[in-house]
Structures are given as structure tokens and as C-alpha cells.
Length: 359
Image (cartoon, rainbow, N blue to C red; front, side):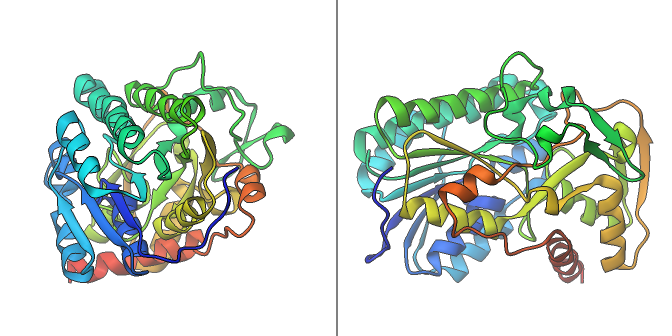
């Protein structure tokens, strides 16, 4: 483990996907603490998902609210531009959140998905190795690297959710769970490639890299769409009177949800005390997990509106029936970390923000 450090200077941080949920939260978190932020984003989310995925509104907010923020309209697949940018900036830390993020969308755009998630990550890693090898490199991975392996665990069906019946998984899925010989979706496979490469640069070149295998990352800054952004999209449907489509598992499929600000606070701890080639599952844990049916109820309590939905027995290919993150390793390595936003308060924030935008 590298020596921990408190910041005694303004760092220069490069954030990819800086207009997205986690990227923009990281920009705000560190920008408000006096650090210089360089954001890479080319609004690819709007290309992947259409107008509902557009993140220009978030870029506008960052530009207006953060004097230390500099925007770079770069596609991370453009190797030379990535190399040139990192070479010229003298970066102190890299937070890589840019991705094609949809489990389902990847099947229709396999080249774009792999080039963005795997090749784009390699471009950034190599830029870091050449020009700032001491800079902590934080990669937002995903729980989809575990594929549908968690579905092999014995489950217990309850009134509103599925639950792990095997006591070995009472705290959820740990980092030791296999990512091999299961169905991932093409998105999961491209993220596996990136995840392993980030680990390898850490171990092979002894660089301070980490993969954060996220559960459901959420918060009021999410531009949620049906193919990506569970709680954000669910709340949007509720507030606008839209119909939410449930795919399989009786609507009892379980996810753990973590607020983007809590993710940013962990990234802060890692940058202060980085490790090499590390992996952490990061999500809300069991206490912040919910099924779709349970999310409907919480949302309805805050919005006062009944959720409209349809149901199909056809589940999404490779989708998890039950998943929540075992956070024991993360807490062991970083005992100062705490989840400050509960599931209930997070959904309440998303509802209130949605009401303001619709007014």
C-alpha cells in the first residue's frame, strides 16, 4: 500500500464522462474543494440513447458553477487526442467514468460498445503510464463483470423481493466472486476487458489503479433512460405519468443503490491513500437494496402518484435476479468511508429534483 496523504495543494484532476452522473458529481466534489478539474465528455450518451440521454444541461451547470472546470470535447476512442491531452496537462489523478453503460444497448452496437469501454480505457491507461504513472487512476467498472453468475446462488422468494438463501452471501456479492464462465451481455464483456486491463496496469507497472464495481449508481443528476438509470428513469416515469416496463422475475429483482456523492467521497479516500491493481464492489449494500416493486412504493410515497407499469415474463439476457454489494473489503481498507445517503432519502432527492425540472 502506498503512503496515505492529505492534500496540501490544488490537484489537477482529469475526469472522463464529466457530464454524466458520477463524472459530474466527481467534478463538483473536487472542484468545490479547490482542485482544478479537466473534464472529457462528448455527449455520447445522447447518441447512444437519444434526446433523453442528452447531458448538455449538466455540462452547462458545471461550466457556470465551477470556476476551476475546463471542458474538453474529446472522444476517449481518439487515442492521439487522449495522449496529447494527458501529456500537456500534468495530471495528479484520473477518474475514468466515461462508458457505453447499457447492458441491452451493447448488442446492437458491439463495435461502439467495445471501442468505448475497452479500447477507450486502454487509451487512458497508456496515457497515464507514459505521462503521469504516479497519479491515482480510478476506473468505474460495474457489477455486470460478474455476469449472470449470481443467479446460480440459491434464492428465497419473498412477498416483494428475491433474497439470497445461502448464508455465505448474507452480506452480498464479494470481490472474490468469479467473473468467468457465465453470460455477461456484450456490455459486461467489454467492461470485463477494461476491468482486467486496469488491474494489470496496476500490478504489472505498479501503478495506483482501482476498479470500482458499481451496483446501481444513482442520484438527482442522472439523465436516466429505460436502458440505463434504474431509479432515475423509474422516478421520471412516475412524475410524468409514463409507463415503466418490468422485464421478468415478477418485478422482485433486487439491486443495491448508492448515491453519486457517496461514490465521489470514496474516490477521494482512494486518491488520498491509493493502492495498486485493487478492486472494490461499491454499492449501497443490503441496507440500500430494493426490488422494482419496492422502489415503486418508495417513489409513490414521495411523489403522491401511482406508478403505471407493464410486465413481461421475458427477462433481460444475463440480468441479475438478486444483487447487492458485500462492502466488507472496502470498509476494511478504508474504514473512514461511510454511506451518508439512505435509499429513502436518495429517492426523495430524485423526486424533488424531478418536480423542479418539470415545473
